Length: 106
Figure 1 (spheres, rainbow, N blue to C red):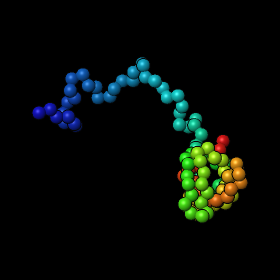
Figure 2 (cartoon, one colour):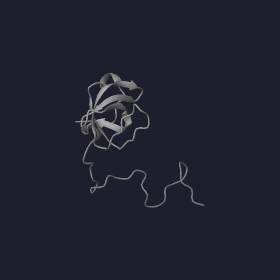
Figure 3 (cartoon, rainbow, N blue to C red):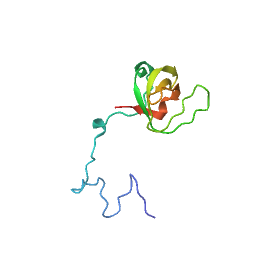
Figure 4 (cartoon, rainbow, N blue to C red):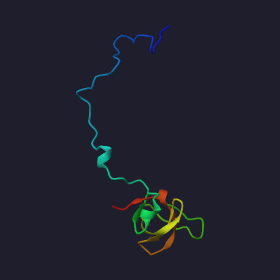
């Protein structure tokens, strides 16, 4: 029976800590160099923000705004937790959207 763990030795040819390969590829971007595109839930900072839709959405309620991926909206005011009242730039339609469908327009 082969045992591996604290009390067992490693199989032949397996080092405890692998050495860094000379052929290792460094990542193109470091996380700190990328802009934060995650949806904001900070409603105090939300007013007057421009957002871009990531996905299509068909509103089900009368006050919900339907939109397509790529639509740009301006936040008019916080509506409720994670939702904003917005105006779509292309046609001035106003309605409520979920913040999770949008990222900040840069």
